[in-house]
Every structure is written in C-alpha cells, then in structure tokens.
Image (cartoon, rainbow, N blue to C red; front, side, top):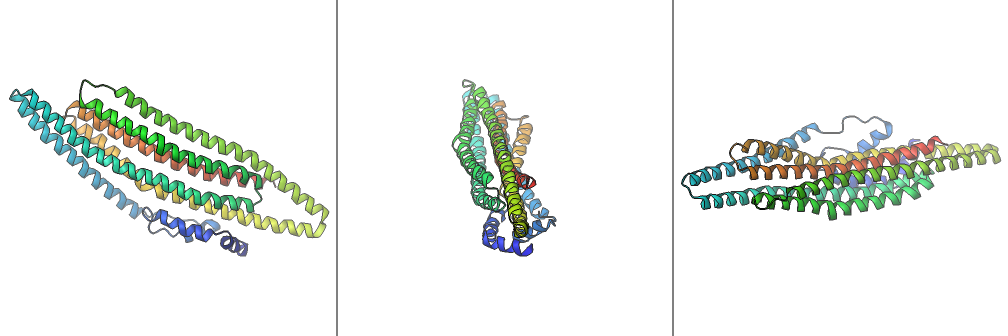
Amino acid sequence: MEEIINSQTNALGINEFLNSAKDYTSNAFPDLDIMKLFSDSITGDVGNIFSYTNIGKIFTSEIHAAVNLMVSVLIIIIIHSIFKAIIENLGNSTASNVVYFVQYLIITTVVINSFVSILSITREAITNVINFMNLLIPLMTTLMLTTGSLVTTSMVEPILLFLMSFIGNFINSFLIPILLISITISIVSNFSDKIQIDRLSKFLKSSIVWSLGIILTIFTCTLSLEGNLSSSVDGLTAKTAKATVSTFIPVVGKIMGDTVDSVIGCSNILKNSVGIIGVIIIIGIVLIPIIKMGILWFSFRLTSSVCEIVADGKIVKLIDQISDSYKILMAILISVSVMFIIGITIVIKITNSALMYR
C-alpha cells in the first residue's frame, strides 16, 4: 500500500501542490512542516500542528497596535473637549462649533485610515483563499476520479468552481462596496444634527449579514444535494461493475477487483489527507486578519465606552458604528473561510459515502 501511495503522490502532482501551499501559511504558521503534516495525516498520527508561541506573538503585536490607536483617539478627544469647554465658557458658540468639526474630521481620518488598511488585508485574504481553492479543487477532483467517482466529479467540480468565483466577485463587487457606503453614510449622518440617515446605514449592514447567511445556505445545500445524489450513483455503478467482472472472469476477475480496491483505497486516503491540509491552509490564511479585526472591534467598543464621559455624543456614535463595521468585515471573512471548509468536508464525505455503496 505504501508503494501505491508514493507512486500516486508523485504521479498526481501532490508534492507540487504541497510546495505551493507553504506560501499561504508562512505568516500564521511559519514553523509548520506541510510535508510532514501530510505524511502524518496519511498514517493518522497528526499531533500538535499549531505554534501557540507564534500565535501569542501575533496577539501581542496586534493588541499593542490597537492600544496605540485607541490612545491616539482618546488624546484627540480629550484635547479638543478641553478647548471646546473653554471656548463655550467664553460664550463663543461659533468657535465651539469649529473646534467640534475639526475634532470630528481628525478622528474620522484616523479611524478611516485604520479601517481602509484592514479592508485591504481582508480583500487580500479572500483572494488568497479563492486562489488556494483553485489549486485544491482540481487536485481533489482528480483524486475523486481515481476512486471511481466519475459522476460525482463531473457534477461537483463545476459547481464548486462556479460558486467560488461567484462568491469572490459578489463579496468584492457588492458586499464590501455596500459596507463602504454604510460607513460613508454614518460619517455624514454624525457630522451634523441636520442630516439624519442612520436607518439607511443600519439597513445596509443588515443586508450584508442577510446576504452572507443566504449565500452560505445556498452553497451548503447545493453541494450536499448534488454530492449525495451523485455519490450513490457512483457507488452502485462501481459495485455492479465489480460484480460483473468477478462473475464472468472467475479467478482473474477477483484478483483484478481486489487490486482496484487497493488503488481506490489509497486514492481515498490521499484525498482525505489533501483535504485536511486544505482546511489547515485556509485557517492559516484567515487567522491573522481575523485576529486583527477582532482586537480592533473590541478596542473601538472600549474606546467609545471610555470617551463617552468627555466626548460629544455624535463622535461616540461614530466610533460605535465603525466598530460594527469591523464586526461585519470579520463576519464576511469568517463566512468565506467556513464556506470553503464546509465545501472540502462535503467533498471528502460524499466520496467516502460512494465507497460505502461498493
């Protein structure tokens, strides 16, 4: 069996895939040995794969950056609040309004610069996940073919590739622009009491959340239904073919059937191992951006709570709305990664189900 696995690994280009996969985990898991992990997953002896020391360093670094940002915002708020209070005591309402507008513009610039940076990281992470899946899916479907899952492969591969392309384009071209529009509306709405369009901003954010839920449901249901239907057909077809060969070619047919079963079993082990690697790589791609967004979301929530004592209500409201935008951006990235992890799991499951019918 080991010889069959080694020959299939070389013939199907699995080593090339593993070498390409290393590039996607260099930031989150720099010490992860993909080749060793693949070998261990074949034998079922997968130990501790994550470097908690490196993850701890990432947390420490992101917390330090978030604290610096939070302190900067608080200093700006405190200084301008003092100036505003002094000017109001002097009875100059016009100058007080000018101080508020200056404060608002400075804080808006600081928080938007931070958000734009995270938005760029999120888009890059989504692109990397999709690019990696474009490497993974052809390999997994090739391994599915070697297990005899012809119908499953012909149905699942085009569906997966289409859905991945659609989801990537939908998020980058529709959901993220809607989020940016929502933030712009929040900034305009909080700039002056005369403009109140908060409900539109909330509606747009709710639309993003609902869209993510609908996409996740459609993706999971479509893949599950198509996979389950085709896997049963593949299993029954293979069982019939094997029985026919064994019956009409009594001795040689039995030997051929057992040999084919061995090859199919090895291919299935390789497919499952490649799937495990795929899940780990996706986690490695999205881990750092999710940590960044989670810490920034919490930091902005904490900032709005602290500065509520001295800051204008509209500024507190703006910081709250920016923190909500971080949460939605985090939900988008988590949804994409969960979707594709579910996709990998379903592909593994339906092929295993097809083998059970044999």
